Image 1: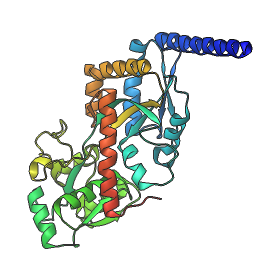
Image 2: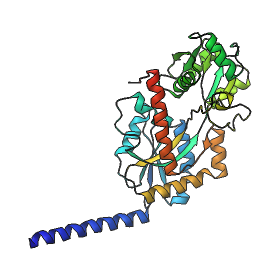
Image 3: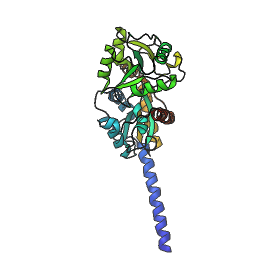
Image 4: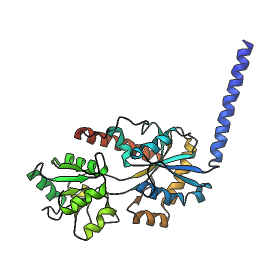
Length: 325
């Protein structure tokens, strides 16, 4: 009996010691470099946003940010690596909007988008733009909807592949307007754009940096952007939501996560640093020039956003019967 009591006291002391050390570690955080996983190759949107912030965060955190590009499986390789990392605040991962569409598209995810991570901040957002070939007699969202209803199943839309943002944006558009457009998937955005420019396909939802030169040259006609607010890159272009489809929104966003269980104090320090960096004029200007709008939402706001996006896209994907497996 006496030995049991001694063992219990010893266990309690060890537990208390562990808690104390964890508190001390969190208070001293960060005291070594932080690994920032980018689950895509260098040069992509997530990589560009990450490197813009990585230059600014050391002066706020007192430690270097080490960018670690881990591409593969549409971002799932690097994201899974982050999910399995130690929850000590020294590993973070930047994820794109597909983070919230993948659960409904694939049955092979090795992580749970909500349970496997601690949200830090929504970092940036970017709009897609609804464009049509100039030969199509549609000069507004309203006239495109009317034309599509007059010609059900006769208008085609291009995307960079099954489950890509352009594909899902068009499916959301079809659902919201009760129209029937036919999907023509391509292996990437460039070949899709070529066929839209040639008129072989009439409609597409590309990103603004890729499409803007063609819009300005008159080779494409822009009808609206997919974000709820107008974009600074194309301020004269209305949103689809204000053009007769209330609530229509498709965001090409990026956000920062840590492994689940990361101490809240570490998450808060990371959020504070990221939020401050996004407000710096040179960071804002650099991101805007690349087509990104800086955001900087709180961890709670980002967590709520992730949940709402998963619910939204699961409905769209299941209704359209889309599978990427």
